[in-house]
Image (tube, rainbow, N blue to C red):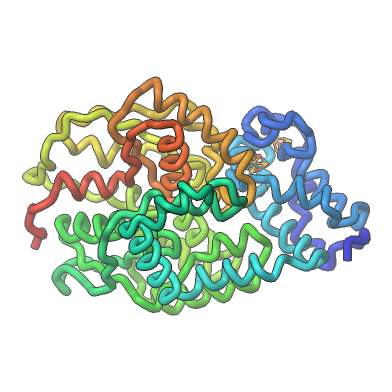
Length: 417
Ligand code: SF4
Ligand code: SF4
């Protein structure tokens, strides 16, 4: 059904009235910068959401194109002088769109399977590693898999798949301060190295690290797709898995924002849960660094990319610099254009490849100018998207999480008692 009708849950859209249509957010919106279409700007999208909620606009393809085209980067929310909670509004709008227009069942099933089933993720990891080691992956490229929509993009994104074991065992002394480690869904396949690095660094700094097996995806993919029910089910599973009142550390900044905002999915108990959530860079930056602990020097140049989740939502853009300053001789340079989204945005980079590529292009050019050996980022989605874009541009830059680099330079150091 696409006819105009008022949304039954009007209170979810009252915050649109906070928008005074000043337009101060427009220069900060990446999609507006690309299309120069008001309907692809925050102000335009808020007007569309208002009209849809009041029943003045049918939920047709044109409306969904403009609302789905938003990256949820929240640059607009960050600069808005009226405090419009844009991130929450766009999620609510997508939920309303989904109520009116039946979603693609195949896409839903794939998202659900990937997010909620660790066995499937483990199988995918093993199969992809095998395909790459056996040469099947290169053969698929030679046969032109890159030209197939969706599949070609997935193939290119899996160019980054380091061999690493993922362990859920507790590490560190029971008597040391305990922390939880959140593993996430994509990170369990594509960022095992960072998860293991986080465990090692925390162990060296004297923590008792718990990694509950019962945890699951944070729910961001579902929430941004308007599937609130599925997102809530995942949030409830995580609420049960992280049941002790201790900090929950997250290596992916985008997952950290979702977990921190569990009040939108679980209400008051979600708010309390969110207060325990820390992006790992923030947590480690606030941890006193032992004087005797000196990482090995590294005479390399590293460009630092700051994900939108880290800058716009967590408001902690400098954590990678704070952490990596412990490594002697490492040259750290901010990647120019860090205030603009790279286009990764969860599954956006697969569903909207043209816009995603257009937004990655300036990052690739900036990296070419700096010629770094390393590119540092705190979000797995950005890491995959940028690694693919850099590789396609012929740049041999290793893309990695700051904690991974720190763990490498701390290799062999004993755990702190
Ligand atoms: S969202 Fe905020 S900054 Fe943008 S037009 Fe509305 S009031 Fe102005
Ligand atoms: S969230 Fe980002 S892409 Fe979406 S309207 Fe705001 S600035 Fe534009």
